[in-house]
Image (cartoon, rainbow, N blue to C red; front, top):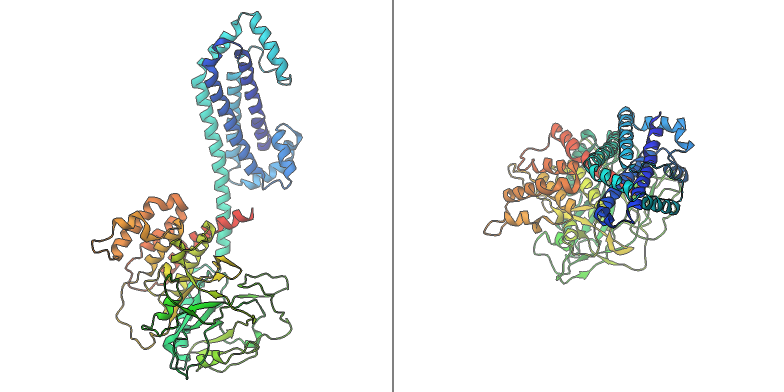
Length: 612
């Protein structure tokens, strides 16, 4: 007997068990003592129905990937002894689905079949058995009533004794059924999990390797340093840049930047611009003309900027974050959306900030004219940029690399919308109407972990980064949502003349662990009872006490909430607290294995479930 046929026999036995139990009920229901056994009867029937449902669900999980037709699957379930169960190709598919567990599956089904036979014998309480299964229930009930009355209840007394004495054996057999169902479920789940992990590992071999992700930090550091030199203006301390964080899916070196000018200076010599979106690519020996065509769609929005002069150089960063009571006037700014994937056909889709139609780009023409001049006045270049320009802004050069700055073309609109960047912290503190789904939180967690590997020990990623430095743009089409697929982190250029002191403890990785916990539970760290328990008498935050609180929170609840993979990623990050040296190649490889890959696996589960 094949494994599929054996499963059909087990499935067919459940209606026989219920029929046998109903046979007893019909005999006993007319007697005065029925109430004494009614409760036990219901318990037995519920047990049978429960194990039947569990087995049917297991079968559906086994068969769903093997049978495309829903009607065919339904026929198998309702006709457990039908010809469809004898199809040899179905058996071969099942073997392929369980390459290493098929023999154990077959053994489990066989043992389950034996248990079902024992249960059937135990519940076949009447000497007539269950031979009248095809007889209508109404007719069987009348015949049973006549028989019982004529024989002066002798048969019922025997049934009652057998039913009462068989309680312990029934309990044992039901326990066996539960264990067999659990084993079948575990065999399938384990096989599926291994296949998913294999698939994930295949996807991760390229971009999510230590070499693939960590090499970006050198280029990111070069770009920040070259941008500092390229401003060529007196107002450079008021310039800020948001770099988009992303989990890399290819090895191309490019970054999306949003340049911001606080517009707080009233000096006439300062160029007039407020915001500019750009992409910067590693050029190397490639010609700029070979840059592929890009699909773009943009819309105008406005970022809040205060109208009073700044008292500190951090005023611009503060103005980018949500404020409840700050009086502001709003200046015009343009933040643009870009999809930097090559456009192989007109059917490619992309996520956009606005609803305007995408401008038509000719695949036969070059999007940007070559312009190899080195940038030495970036501020003026941005101010003089025209929307119809087709040239790149220029090139940033050092001794080893060239980086080309491309403007992200924009569509003009007749009006602007006042928008303000929203921090991850404000979202977690429930300061806005929208909520983060678990899939969205896992996506952000993966992006932050991958970005840490790319930007660690660069000027883009400071040691104390936190949820309030992770910024999102509101969705211009829906004020109750934000563009969660594109988080930014803001940095200014006022530190260009400052000298760095001796190496200090780097807590960026342990801070990442705390942010992962916050995303896991969709709740800020400071509101947790674990954190409140460790607040010192002066009420000031202490990194050592915060670490203790985070570890207790993680150990107590993370595994149950998000699973061992997510918990392991958090623990690894927290274990890096106080690290002085930068991540060496060994540590980077370890972070990929211990943090990035587990988080990608967690996120992938929701991607898979959303496609089913």
